Image (cartoon, rainbow, N blue to C red; front, top):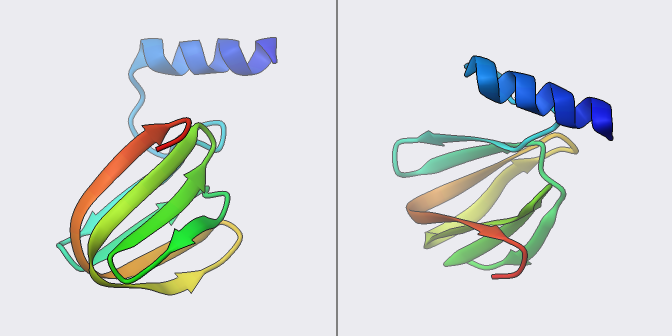
Length: 93
């Protein structure tokens, strides 16, 4: 645990840009019709207007219309449809 904390602090201090360390989620928004999420922990809510994805520190809520899971693997998932909002929730939303 202490080792992870030290690595996190060093990364923050160096303001490193690039791939997230320590399995932090990475979101890539492609226009308004596609979002890629890496390092997720699964989908907890699924609907055409709202998809909730669990991540290390809480969840990500994607809102829009016609939302679908384009693909999903253990490491990443793709959500397609019209993306209106992405909300980060620490703990419960």
